Image (cartoon, rainbow, N blue to C red; front, side, top):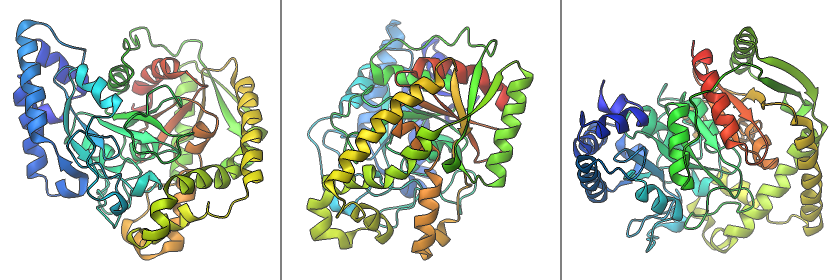
Length: 442
């Protein structure tokens, strides 16, 4: 087993039993990053000194048999919107160039206390406001499966660093799909946590009422372990994960169509496999989703522009035009319309919880489209805008409903299967995902 292709759980086990040394593990990842031709497209900046210090402390604990947590000594990457003391944190934007925080984000503090090793900060889309992962202002990571394609965003570098073995896992944020889209397009597991479950202290905001934090990993087990470290809680017990007696719901919502051929085929294949393993699959209309999704144009853009207008108004020329235009779409929205949209959304959330009662999860394609060609996105602003909104259509369901959600790889490249639960359903989704994982991967 190679260090940089092992899962986070496998690495931790081998450090704990003395097969691998934590410093050697850290060096293997740092050397892999240094020698990779796309390193500068994936990592905004490395934190080598901190990583080696973290690893040396983990080595000492391993020798004493006193690990801080189940992932002690495992090296991971961090999206460039998590504050890192003394290291530039710019959220992929030239508007924040030279911004250096004085202390770590709270989730980074928690991860460090759990023994995780910080390798560096990964590239992302500007201020996290695009699902495509394309950022000509700083850097665009290559899609790990097909370098000419978009990597997915906004946690693009978090996904690519993990898939290419340049980190054992990546930490990203998800406001409208920014963990799940890059996870799906790079064949990874991605967990979107419930809003408010993980603290946003020290995290550069996009839309504080929707921003969430989550891991991008090789396996569901890794996602559960990393989530526990960020949550400062005990890991979810996956040992009894089973498909026996499971019920899932497919939403027949008009706004969730169309779906491209490959994601639709992946969904139907997945449903067939799950059905053959005893999972009950029901369909139901979802009028609350049909009503809520169009309100995204008000809810997200109004808050995003209000948060960043103090920099966008005087310095918007430093931004990629389609991303700037998305922010500025919130510039002249009516306050009454914004309040009405939130009132509608609160009703829709209550109706959604009622709809999914008795089901283990809602199931749908993570993205209704395949990753588009990066060069075409950069050359055609209208194409960029259309593909961005389409890519995020399904994932926004979880954000709008305030839900936890999990994306799993299928045996169709770039096509994730998304499980959406209710608020606080992380443990339930992780157990369900662990049972589905071997079935979906064949």
